[in-house]
Amino acid sequence: MLTLNQLTKVYSVGDPALRDVTFRVPRGQVVGLIGPSGAGKSTLIRCINRLVEPSSGAIYLDETDLTCLGSRELRRARRRIGMIFQEYALVERLTVMENVLSGRLGYVPFWRSFTRRFPGHDIENAYRLLDRVGLLAHADKRADALSGGQRQRVGIARALAQEPELLLVDEPTASLDPKTSRQIMRLITEICAERQLPAIVNIHDVPLAQQFVDRLVGLRAGQMVFDDTPDRLDETMLSEIYGAEDWTAMDQEDDEPESSSDAQISLRLPGAAT
Ligand SMILES: Nc1ncnc2c1ncn2[C@@H]1O[C@H](COP(=O)(O)OP(=O)(O)OP(=O)(O)O)[C@@H](O)[C@H]1O
View 1 (cartoon, helix red, strand yellow):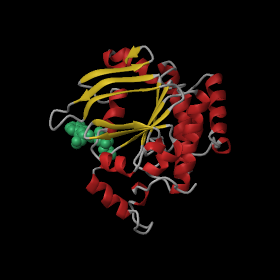
View 2 (tube, helix red, strand yellow; view 1 turned 60 degrees about the horizontal axis):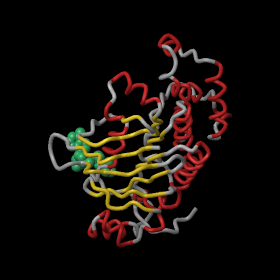
View 3 (cartoon, protein in one colour; view 1 turned 30 degrees about the vertical axis):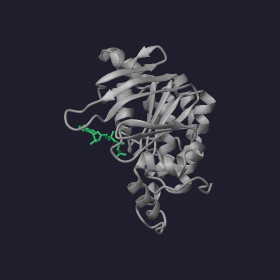
View 4 (spheres, helix red, strand yellow; view 1 turned 90 degrees about the vertical axis):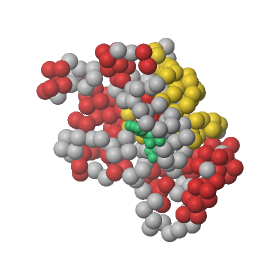
């Protein structure tokens, strides 16, 4: 279980990026984090893994307050947090298998990581994970030979190789076409249910989020303005989160042809095609 308690972040300049954000994510629940640009979504995710230092508040991963950890304890705690990134963050010249095994680097002694010699059970587990994400036949291919969707599947398998207790997912579909985006969101949510993993997914595509996540948290100017199931997010609430003017503008953009490079971040209300 992840618990954020009055999490606040004030950067050296500007208004607070997060103000007293409080919510819990129980095991197996996938929370979609939505809000306009600058609302604080990335800051929230980065505070949890302490890439950004929170200004105040607490972040509990089960019993551990992540905000209080020294550097050594923090390294250990980060092993418990799997990250999935928009641009996959793979090592392109390494194979799919080597990329998945890199999720184990925090667990093996330095000499093993240096020579990339991993214990047999890590390798067996990596094969199982590749099978789960549908990439078993691609284990020996170089990462740069894969499509975007396949790369993201490698990213998911690598995060799972860590045997995490929490998944933090940053715009997992922003570089993917709509069909592949749905496949990736389906995979993430199925895996979280299977493994009873709590997850926070930072996502711009509201309809996609509504289709797959258990719960939506809406941020605006660093404050939580929505926390409910996706079916409770109506037009009024969307205007509240995104601001009436911005929301109307984005809604109109949605009427433009798909060729728009912003097509994927356009916002539509429920009923997106599967
Ligand atoms: N390193 C930084 N130093 C100062 N201000 C920052 C820094 N990073 C973010 N901010 C500010 O904090 C606020 C929240 O930014 P953040 O990137 O978390 O928003 P976001 O919701 O993730 O936006 P986007 O959807 O565009 O990625 C913004 O006002 C931003 O300008």
